[in-house]
Amino acid sequence: MEKTKVGIVGLGTVGSGVAKLLLDHGDRTARHAGRTLWVEQVVVQDVKKPRDCTLPKGVVSDDLRRIMDDPEIKAVAHLVGGLEPARTIMLKLLESGKDVATANKALLAEHGPELFDRARELGRSIAFEASVAGGIPIIANISQCLSANQVESLTGILNGTCNYILTQMDEQGADYAEALAEAQKLGFAEADPTMDVDGSDTAQKLAILAHLAFGSRVKWSDIPRRGIDTLEVEDITYARELGYRIKLLAVAQLVGDALEMHVSPTLVKSGTPLAEVRGAFNAVSVVGDAVGPLFFHGLGAGQMPTASAVVADLIDIVVGRTAITFRTLELWSKREARVAPLDFSDSTGRYYLRFHVEDRPGVMAEITGVLGRLGISIASVIQHESKRGAAGLVPLVIITHQTTEGATRKAMAELERLACVRPGAVRMGIRG
Ligand code: NDP
Ligand code: HSE
Image 1 (tube, rainbow, N blue to C red):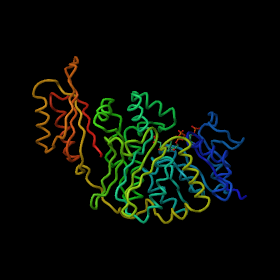
Image 2 (cartoon, rainbow, N blue to C red; image 1 turned 30 degrees about the horizontal axis):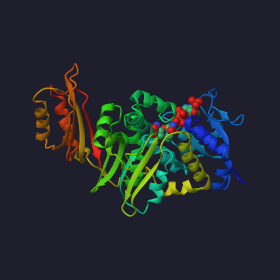
Image 3 (cartoon, protein in one colour; image 1 turned 30 degrees about the vertical axis):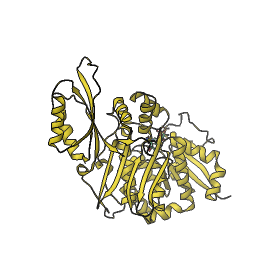
Image 4 (spheres, helix red, strand yellow; image 1 turned 180 degrees about the vertical axis):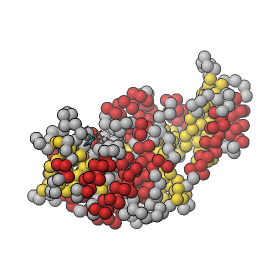
């Protein structure tokens, strides 16, 4: 059988999974590619590090030139995280004639235009199925399978680490720091997990999906975003009492001609598909004007699910499919944006507001006074009888009727200035 040489740069969580699939299941990949994908070179930073996979002698080095200078290596899995040296490595690979499959969403979200332009100039291509939602084939679905549709909305749980933490806190009563440490140990988190928990990783993935689905050109860092790092266990408990689960949702939806986009922890009605996504699973709910609603669900982080997407990309590269889609999609090209972003302040919905307030007469009137003045109507209130702790504080949860992001943001700023309200109030949207 014909043999096509491939390279791997990065042999951490994902790179090791890719090596295992190519070496241990070569028959499978050969069947789908019509040729053997032969691991010729693997490049790492530290050759002395113990690895989670066994490679033939002489394959692993710390010298990128061994891939760049081998004209028979056609496709390379680029599995280095962060921006630099990941960007330089990607450019060197393209410039030495390689097509590249990457899982690095941070790199694409930050430097997509530069990298895709360079690839086009050089007649090369970049595949990136693994960059969003791990093992779920969402990139191929949105960019190819749904191309007869105008996508109307896209709602996702796109960070496995956050979903794992929220599930552990909700179901096991785990502490936030404990659950994050476990997610790191299981290989779900980024090298620096700040980007996972503060919503940045999700915003980077949303920017990529919105680019494909809506032709948006919004930079990930301009997407309004909040993470799960300020949540308390009590919010998870109140959400459950109200019949909801908290999920970090990425939303992109057309409102008239504009695109509403944000990343926010949200109360999602228990029993609905998004609310039941657990652990490191991700999900993407898509509505297309022709196809109607679709729901994609699968592991969004972790070694083998991510490697599954990378290896499929390598196969697509060597059989020539990537070159065709890459050329026709014109991703991150100089084309104008097809949609303008909606001012997030105008986005509408119901909200959960949680405060710690002084337990004394008149407090409720002060709070409802502010909300009333800003036109925010209250749907329900939870204030459990206080055990009268030393601080004399009581938690207060307010659920609003339909209002706007802007009005609730303004209300929170005013309410936190009241003497009866302690800092650290929480505000989340409600779905369902
Ligand atoms: P790891 O930190 O586990 O691995 C990164 C690898 O990059 C290491 O093997 C490291 O080498 C190598 N590396 C770093 N610098 C260089 C360099 N200059 N030259 C060659 N190799 C280098 O990361 P992951 O495998 O978890 O993630 C890789 C990418 O995949 C990231 O972009 C991440 O966002 C993305 N991703 C990760 C998922 C996951 O579940 N982990 C899921 C989806 C995407 P050494 O080992 O010698 O230090
Ligand atoms: N750190 C990311 C996550 C990896 O937890 O979802 C997958 O992109």
